[in-house]
Length: 579
Image 1: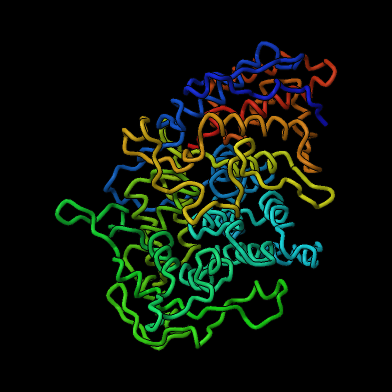
Image 2: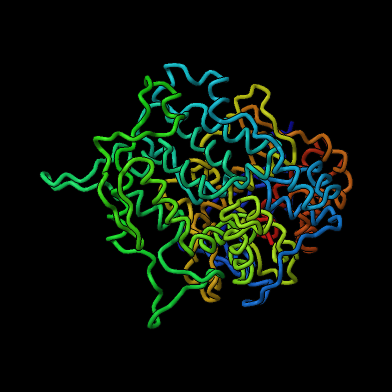
């Protein structure tokens, strides 16, 4: 395995960084990079654009590949894709391509691979994995041991990769962060919530809404656990947190939408979807939800919540132009049915799923096509997530590589890490998967399942102020956690990971080492598997020059050449921006 001296010393910010200047240095310290080491900070900082977490449209923004207002049909590509096309597809549909999955997509075609993934049984649940690996012991009652290992393990090694990617996209919508859970057995509580998202990733959005609503994790994160009906004597009212976020973030959004995601306007102003009265009325429905009467052990946090009649409002509750009454789960189901039927749900949800998988700025026509599948899968079914996923990934706007570089999305940090881990067969022989919490700015600035708030790590409508993205009316959600500090932290973190792994999680570079002596073949392979063939000629040439500065016959030369090629690829804007 590589030693600590295989690459340039970690990137270090200078005092000039505080003034916004992109000044960083590397120290060769006898490293294999030699004079080529200057490439590392140049490529890394280019991903930051113009300093304050911004960038140009080619660094995470998107323009329309299909003209706005057109209604071109969803394209199902039947011809076998090339390896490069397959890798780009997998960059959108999985937690990272591998040589074997690229070959599978080439062999089966896009639609065939999707069919195989839809038919694949669920991997061992997070909850069951925690139990099987001894995390249900009393000593773990008040900690979060096991949560990060089970999540990283599934994202990296499980074959149900489409489910893993869609499940993480759903977690970006139905956000729960484990640090916001205040009761015992937090690992099991969060694990059971992740299992809800993964189990329902290919199901129906309405069923997912119901499962999320009755989950203990969501009820504690958004504070409606043991929510009580109004008390006229004391003047207390039901907690409104979930009622508000269910509408605002999970289903219909703040403003009424057309099917293409554009705002409906009245008098030059967008039309609001709900009022405070709607929030208060809906909050009455979500009262009386409590845990089943089980002992305080992990199974108590797995099962759906039940109604405590004494806390539950049974009188009429009015919202969104409807009234439900009678209380209990029947009232909750009626309320969720009303929200699910709202015309905003198809474009609101579809756009966010497109943003998470394909592009930050889908064209109105693209949103319209996917939203239409959400509204009706062709068989009269609303909310069929399989149909929605197919529509997203097989649409002409997803499958056609635009001529312009100003299309796509910034790869989120967790997916960059899992790209590396999957591409180079990372394993944990002890099954400990001791990668841990990577939220720190000196690591990835993100960890799945550890969002700081219900608004996620980044908002779907975020635009870095003062950039060409903002000037072009584009959004770049992932740039909300991207600035010089976090990019430097990411490059330094990946420097250590690529060289030495983390804990006993290490890559297997055996196959790629066979190409180490040929810099062109080496960079071509890494470009294909990691970067989906999107490294420019100039970037490839710069990386090859750095690789060739190290003799292939020198001591540790081959492994150093491999490490340099991987790190410089993962630091380049061509990789960071998935077109």
